[in-house]
Length: 56
Image 1 (cartoon, rainbow, N blue to C red):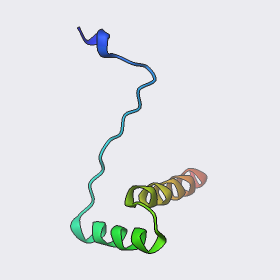
Image 2 (cartoon, helix red, strand yellow; image 1 turned 45 degrees about the vertical axis):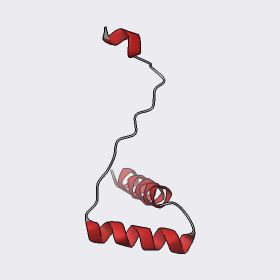
Image 3 (cartoon, rainbow, N blue to C red; image 1 turned 60 degrees about the horizontal axis):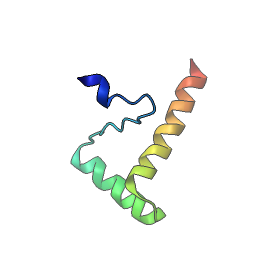
Image 4 (cartoon, rainbow, N blue to C red; image 1 turned 180 degrees about the vertical axis):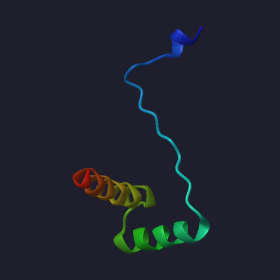
């Protein structure tokens, strides 16, 4: 029964894949900033989403 495992408050984390050269760039930038790659990518995506939403 699927209902037994359903949780409304569960947070789903979906992996996002980038190509090798882009991943290396993210790693280099994250290392220079002293932050994890995931945090750097989330910051960039957040800014891009805010920009896109402001244009629409």
